[in-house]
Each structure stands twice: as C-alpha cells, then as structure tokens.
Image (cartoon, rainbow, N blue to C red; front, top):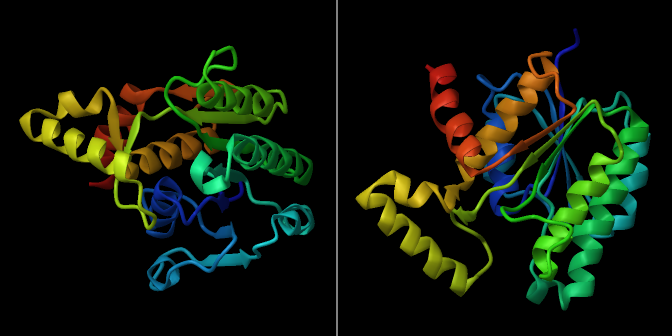
Amino acid sequence: MSTPTALVVGATGLVGSQILSVLRAGAPSPYTSIEVLARRALPPAASADAAVPVKEFTDADLTKWGPHLASSSPAASTFFSSLATTRATAGGFDKQYKLEHDFNLELAKTAKEAGIKTFVLISSGGADAKSFFSYPRMKGEIEDHIKELSFDHTIILRPGLLLGHRQESRPTEKILQNLAWGMGHIHSSLRNVWAQDAETIARAAVLTAARAEKGEIKEKVIVLGQSDIIRIGGKEWKELAH
C-alpha cells in the first residue's frame, strides 16, 4: 500500500492551520507529503522546519485552483477542506454560499475525478439541509452534495464553537471563546459539550483519515460529532503520540 499524501484547502484559517500543523509535524500522522492550495502565502512558521515537506500553490484567483488540482500527478490520497468564511467577510450570504458551497463542491468534484480517495470536510454542529436557518442549511447542503460524489471515504466533522486564535477579529466569537475557556477551568466537560479546541478538531480529522487510509474504517461516510472529536482528537491521539 502506498504511503498517504495530503492536500489541504483552508490552511490559513483557524482549523485549517491546525490541520496543516498536525500533518507537517509527522508521527503519529502517517502522511508523507502535503500540498496546500491557498489565496495567500502561508506564514513562515507554517512551512519552515516541517518534518513533512509542504508544497504551496498560491493564487488569489480561485478559478485557478481546479485546473491545478486536475493536473496534479500523482493525486493526493486525502483531501482536507476547512474552506469557510463569514457572511460579513464575504459581503453577504450569497457570496458566502458561493465560496463555502459552490467552490467546495467544485473542488470536491475535481478531486474525485483526479483520483483522490478520501475527502475530509470540516462542517459545523447543527448542519442540516432542511433547517429553517440559512447557515446550518448551507452546511447541510455542502455535506449532502459532497456525499453524493461517493468518495471511497467521506469524513465529516461537526464541531461546536471553535476555540483558538484567529488572525482576523471576530468580537462576538471572542466573547464566547472566553466564556468557554472559563467554563473549562471549572470542568472540561462544561466546555467540551459545546466548544472544541481547533487543534483537537485537526487531530480528530487527521487520525480518522489515517484510519480510513489503512483500511481500519469500512464505512463510506463517517460523521464525527462533538463527543467523537473530543475522544479521537484528545484521548486516542495522545495514546498514539506516546
């Protein structure tokens, strides 16, 4: 069996940057090479001194990503997508939908055609294509439409509030993060039921994908809720790391 290789989009975001960090650190991650598709260059710390080499394809024109992916040979074995934005940053829900749904789906289709076997999607708790509310409905539609592509394995993570440091300012999220950290100081379970650290989410994503690569997971679609993320990205990851 060939050694697994990874392709990452959304690597400059909160969870994506942690996925990249986990991958490039090496064991217990089994991935031997990484390519990142990004709109801007990675911070120096994200590419220097990596145990696993990181190759960057940087282009602010997102329409260039698909052709690059299609021409890559050999194709990566696993595609990690944490590509997302906010309504405010995008300039309205329609533009947010275009990036999060349309572009994710376009890349997923290209990845499938290129021969990528496993697709890992960072979604959101409460994702539901039938929701009355636009955000969880969008997230649910992304999940459903990527599942329809029938990768060998589709791995979907549904975290709650994301904990960690962002480069961009999100005041409301920061308030909730501080609340979550405060509750975590009382007892971790008070935080874990509704908020997860970005590094823990990343570890759960990488470890589950690695298990799929090794044939340890037979299901075509795996959905990880918040308790699964805490268990896999916390306890199970630490057991392998020691």
